[in-house]
Length: 564
Image 1 (cartoon, helix red, strand yellow):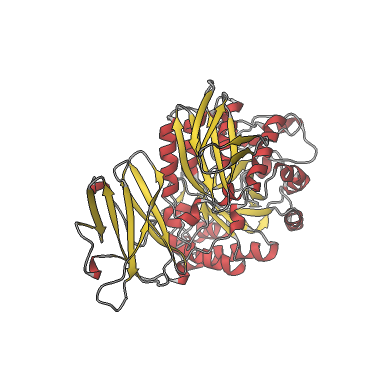
Image 2 (cartoon, helix red, strand yellow):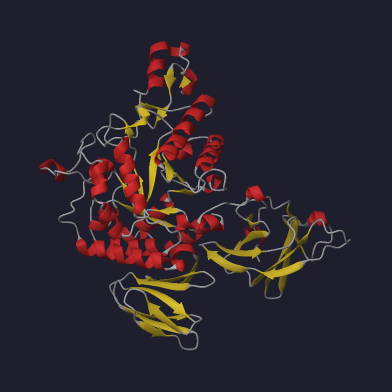
């Protein structure tokens, strides 16, 4: 066994509490290098000279291109835990304890890995209702308005204003409900000189082009009647240069009481990217932090919104986000907090900052395989496994999985307008771990390149209705299945563009298969069960001697519930 590949880290994504007397442990080893891993654990404060050790076998949960990852959940009656791992491969046996390799089990307590204490406050406090969500993102100016004119159908330029508004969204709630979305994420609604509103002038005022407070209350009320949540977009990384504090600084310089609200260096200031009209806030300043927190609490308290999407969240300090979370959860415990993080979000998802992040690495993986075929299926599978295993188990099913957004080109554009490629990507999106996010118009075949082209208006009259019904069917299947919403993920079969993976809970198992090729294939899977039922069409499949054989036509897709 390759010792250099073996890794475990205490108090990390490799060791964390999932309940008051529940601990999840993970071990990394070289791929295909180990036959079996056993965990031995005991009460590190046991008063006997030798700790009584309990044994539990670990299982492979994820595999990427280099490593196998073994995981196990233990439920001891004690919460101060010492443990070690026993690895076997053929006749070889290794004991791995406290970062060292031994030939025999450790005799001293200080040789054990230690999980000091399962603290109640460290247990992630999530809500299954988040994992029930199908999020529909709306770029407000381009979604809908009454009295569509000729300009509505033009290709946008950076500064074009089309007139979409909150009333337009209210008028299309029946459409959103029919699609199956049960959460709307709105891009910023606050007063701003731009069409995108990411340069806020007044955090307490709705931009007049979108409506007013009464319109927002009506929208939220109508959404809640339909069991649709509403998440607003907050920009606390920067403001508009027309924001009152920055204008005061421009007028008074260092004599302004708001000078420390921004970050100055050599008579210049930090900004968002290279946008000088968006000066960067200094959230390390206690007054700035409190102002932002007051804003977040106000819109929850006064309008009963259901959460916040946080713009440029990874460029703001962790200390601020911890304060932010505590304040928001004090107002509404089940408010959903999702950060815009373009790379790994692990450090934000320990239960003290966000509940989720926008899963851009997932998006790029789907574009790379489904839209562009820049990766093989094996490479795609390895990356997806690696992406899931980075996060703690309670987080994996609430990562916000997107295939495009207002900041990227549309998936359909990346796929050269090939609807079949889009369908295949959406199939995976709706059946993998995480919360699916639909960017407005994707379900009707809206296309477009990078910003501003990705922010085209929707053509509700001539959109692709067959594609809409495909989205609708997949969303309906997902919402009906506990395995697809809450279940774990395991790869079952990867070969020549045919992919099978299992989603499962203790009570529900679904096997998902797709054939991403123009050639028919027949595959056989090892499955425990009596029969399978295709959730697309109700067709039943016999399982004989724990074997399920399936014919997969070109671009074929199956979602099969296994019945015992």
